Image (cartoon, rainbow, N blue to C red):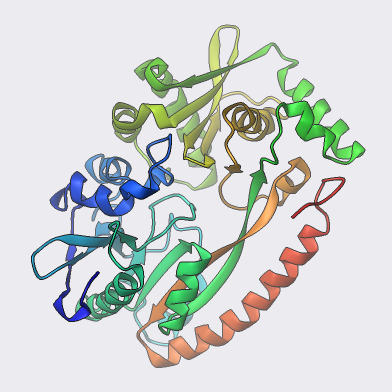
Length: 395
């Protein structure tokens, strides 16, 4: 239990200054522990600190840590929030470039801004992380209030908490933050025992298409290798990084992650990493990285140095589904965008974010825009749901 009057909040520029024990006690309370260590591995100290230690999330890259920390009068850390001071809007996947452009054309200054997020990955997970036994509503109100104060103290234009769980989004909306929605595609495991069980749930046309795509992906002599845990080596990461850099350079212009980051997470959380690698003639030619949560397999990064038709679908979608079925994982979440995922069994799910905007005029304009956008997202969600590939839709 906590008395709000006795709580103090601060912002730390490095997660290392908060420490693994204090951070993880909030990010993964003991009561939330399951067979796998992390329900949300991206929130772990090891993952977030690897981003900072490797230099991927740093002042130089425009991701300066401003991690929020809530303490009791006795100094105990009872809640934290991964937060960054940013001078751009890249690597977020909830796009506000138009807001920035409009404000700056009107003579305002949009950057810097505060971003509560997991850098470079559109993963839904709590942003206000509360130690077990402490009242979540108290922590949410206290940290939300502190974040707004820090926004003003840093002369930032705005505060953005992105990819929130719906309940946290609702609570922050009740505290006066602007509410935004989006969509993402996730595959639901409905108790399938085999990949063929999953296929049998699809319409005949979709089932045939997937079988053809899987055959086509492997017809050039491609072999698929799944690597996790102690079997991961630096040789695997060297190959995968080449794939990541090739695809990332073409897709974004400048990939967000460096080689050191992959070594760091492999050292720290190998049991929650799954590399799906494609070989041809004994040489790795493509790969996809997945991160294993307690109930979700998160597909994140993919790349290839050779083009093979349908290989992306095989490595990123179908191998992930097979792994989730074998391991009894409830969901596969394959990252941002991609309406093509619908035909492959992935269903549209709502995403949520909350925003505080300091300038009253900009806040009113964004609020009006978000009212319309939420209506469009809801309409699109319904329309996409009507085109789900399943023979007997159960959701």
